[in-house]
Length: 353
Image 1: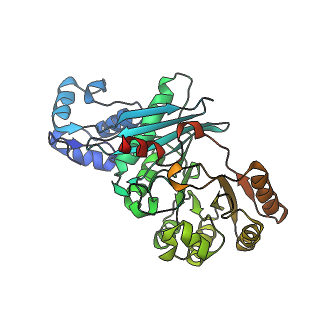
Image 2: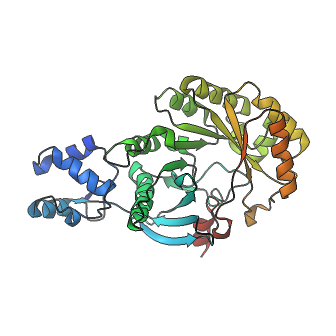
Image 3: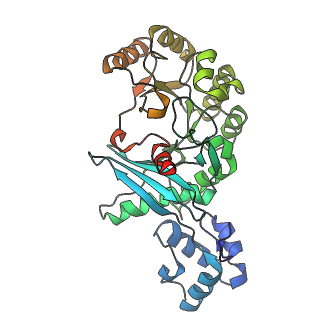
């Protein structure tokens, strides 16, 4: 990506790509790793920060290259202090959401892969304004690094421990940039994150599900299911017309078979839509024989969608039914409802202002 000043943006480059970008400056190869560590591990936003580089080199690099980082356009902190939502704006004015969740097991972040979304899911705020564009590898990575920098600045040894690729957008529709992001996260000159600490969530883009399974990256896969049969799923998720539920389940089974990783099916609970006994019975049947678990998500109310959260009693009943029928099930802990932490809500508010 080129800036208005025609300086090349190097944020999001791999070490090999960075070495290539530095070729005109005739510097030793080790300089590339120094610069990468400054950008990704130490929060440098300009070459002037890189004090172990010669002053003249810093000036030359600054004249030709730029470290593209977003600015924080908005930030909301939940009352309980566990959840922080960021609206990050890139150089072209595109804004995306990222969320920090301070969990008992560490700091988890949720990143976006597209500005907006074209999937059209009936329960989601991200799709209300359609999709603006795909994010680049660097723009996805910038969300993680921005939050990691903030945690480091708090001075308590905090860092990003796990990443869920579950924000706005369909990750598998931006496959190459998302895979580039995952590989960079894993590099020791970035965050050195284990692949098993990374989860990707998809609405079921079948060809890329197979591609991901055979790609050799043992990340965790979540599949947005949200209904136990094709007709209801198509009402909630129009993408199911293109990739029928039966094909999505088949691809998820393949992923589990190849990676030996348990697949998680996300199931958003909507009052008197998909939370009844008939749906529970169908879901049990669907899960039979799979290396899989179900994550129940009581819907985060979105005013524009007029879909309601079931009562606590109804949620408990649904969970109990699955458990007693030997389905591995969890209920997502509610976080950030008071700060519009559901995908797309904060961005939509700014688009409407």
